Amino acid sequence: MFSLIGIVIVVIGFVLRINPLLVVTVAGLATGIAGGLGPLEVVAAFGKAFITSRYVAIVWLVLPVIGLLEHAGLKERARAVIARLRTATTSRVLLVYFAIRQVTAALGLTSLGGHAQMVRPLIAPMAEGAAENTFGELPQKTRYRIRANAAAVDNIALFFGEDIFIAIGSILLIRGFLDQNGIHVEPTQLAIWAIPTAVCALIIHCTRLLLLDRKLRAEIERKTEDA
Image (cartoon, rainbow, N blue to C red; front, side, top):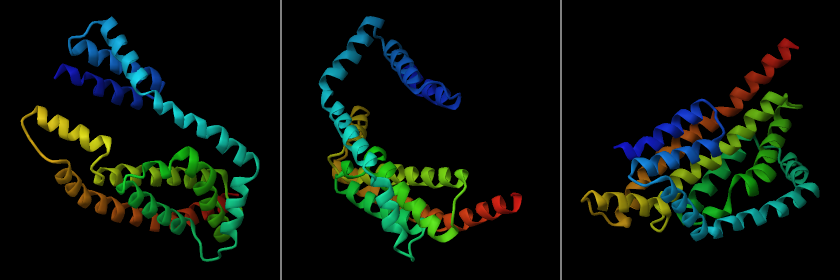
C-alpha cells in the first residue's frame, strides 16, 4: 500500500497548485522508494523510461507548424467561418466537436484532436465567434469561460472515448493490473464495459453544454448591468 503514496502526493500537490513537474517528479521518487528501490535505481528507471519513449517527443514537431498557421491568421479564419453561420452557437460548436472527438477516440484515432493542434487554434476561436454572433462583443471573463469549456470538451471526450478501443494503453494497463491480482479478463470485455460509461459521459456533458449558452447570456447581462 505504501507504493500508492505517489497518488497522495500528486493530489496534494495539485490542490496546493505546486509546479506540476516538481509534483510528478517527487511522486515518482516516493513511489519508487516505497516500492523498495534505491534513489539511484529510481533515477535509472526514469532514464530507461525516457529512452524507450523517445517517440513521444515527436509531438513537439507539431508546435512550430501550429505557430506558423496562427501567425498566418488561422484563428481569425476560423472565427470568420463561424461568423457566416447564423445558426451556430457556442453550445452547438462544442457539441459537434465533442461527438466527433469521442467517436474518433473510440476508433483509436486519439491524435486527431488535442489542445495544441485543435482546441487552441480552431475550436476555441470558433466557439468564441459563435458567441459573438449571438451576444456581440464579449467580456474577457466570458472568453476565458468559453476557452475552458472548449478544453474540457476535448479532455472528457478523449478520456471516456479511448477506453472503447481495445488496443489503447489504459485498457492494457487495467488488464495487467487485474491479471496481477488474479482476475483474468480480455481487452474486448473491458472495452465493452467502457461503452455505458462513454454514453453517460456524452449525455451528461452534452446537457451541460446545452445550458452553456444560457449561462453565457446571464453572465454578459450582469456585466452590462454593472457597467
